[in-house]
Each structure stands twice: as structure tokens, then as C-alpha cells.
Picture 1 (cartoon, rainbow, N blue to C red):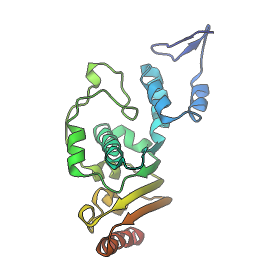
Picture 2: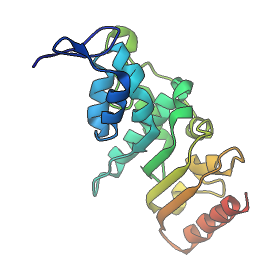
Picture 3: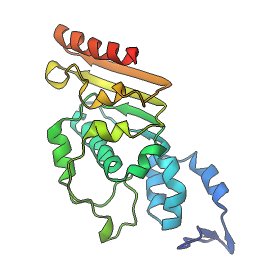
Amino acid sequence: MDTIMGHSNGPIVGSHRIPDDIIIYILDFLESDTLGTMARASRHLQEVVTPTLYCKITIPQKEGKDIEHQKTAARLLRTLSRKSSLTALVRHFENAPTLVPPEVLKSVCSEHTYPSNLETGSGDQSSLVHPSHPVPEDAMRSCVNLQSLTVAGTIDIGNINGTGGWLSFLLDPSIKLKNLRLLVYPQGLLTWAIWNSFVVKILDI
């Protein structure tokens, strides 16, 4: 049985259109890579898939690939900065890096590339990403519906200060997490002290 992608009213299987509620049910079983592909298949699917795609975001990480981890996070932050309507969709953020270095963010924001799995678009020339320099904590501060966050990785004295770096959005009273997991491993006693002072500020909110 053939499946045809409709331009405005969703996919067609045989002679029948698949209702949106069935598509939404299926989305819960799909990985983010598949969701991203579906979102680029048609404008209608983009509208249906995007809420699920951004509801729970997991940043992939491989051992020894910290830069790639940071770049993926930077691309997400870039997208949220440029498409503020997406920030309200984010409810769960897993495996966020401890650090998004300014130089990594600048490099990512200078890319001219087609949207990635977390940057849904039609794929034409109007969807090209153009450089700008968003402030990461501002992008996350707009995620007012964020319920859970997991931060994982090591951190050293050069990458953290009393404000928490890009994680300073956690100090904003409008961010009311139900679940916060900090799987962070500070390098050195001074880093431990600075990191602990930041965590105390979060707990005091």
C-alpha cells in the first residue's frame, strides 16, 4: 500500500488520509531523528510533529566528544533564540552540557546550513540559517514550561563562575523545575566551591 505525502492535509495511505490524532499517537514511539525527518516532509506534518519534537530534547553525547556535545547544544540554543514560539514547547531537557563556550556558540551561529533535526523547516532557501549571536541563558529563560533538566559533564575553574555560566537561567524565578539532576563533576577544590555556591543559589529560589 502506497503512502503519499499531502501538501496541506497530511499523508494519505491508499485512498484514506491519516487523521492527526493517529499521527500524534505514533509520534510518541519515534526517535528525534525520525521526528525531524517527518517535520521536513510537509508543512502540515511540521505543524503536527513540532510540539512532540521539542517537548523532550535529549542532547546526544559520545565519550571524548565534548565539542560535538557543546555544538549540538549551541545549535539548539540558536534555534530557540530565533524561533521564540518554540520555547514554550520545551518541557524536558536531557543531557545538557555543563558549558557552551562563547567561541563554540559564535562558530555555530556563523554557519550557513540547512535546518538540523531540531531546526525544522521546509528545506528551501528561505530556511537557511543566518548568523546572529544569541545569548544562551536568554533562550533558556524563555522556556517557562520547562519541567525537568539533566546536566551532565565535567567542569573546571575556567568554565564556571558564581553566576553559573549559561546555566544562570536557573536563577530566574519564572523557571520552576519539578526535576533537576546535576550530574556535574567539578575539577579541583576551588571549582567545587564555586559550583556549590551556584547550586545553593538555585536551591534558595
